[in-house]
Image (cartoon, rainbow, N blue to C red; front, side, top):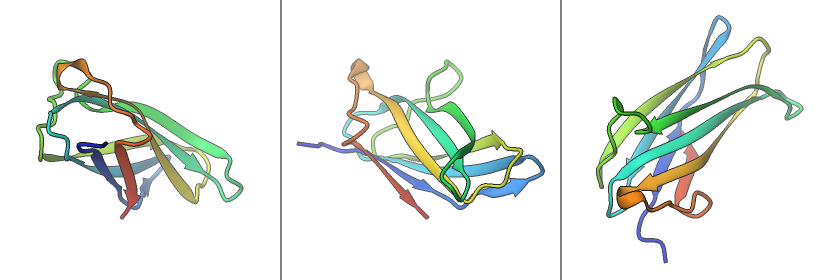
Length: 115
């Protein structure tokens, strides 16, 4: 049984020069704080081919980035270098660590939706 999740809203990308900026809105509905979360953003062309990607800690992960308390919200801006046009974005989480070092199931406890 799921006791909470990381809710993620992916905003429409903004392109400037050879960079795409994808804003994520994150909300922690777990009872515990989220110590860290790592995500990857893929930029896809109209054939579904990856034309850009980047992986970042979006919550915690380093000493200067705070954890996300239970019930709290935050935002994270991915800046993805891209030389080619893209039509879709895909956001995938590969690691979510809860308070006390417990690993969340990213397939069941991370909900990603588009704005």
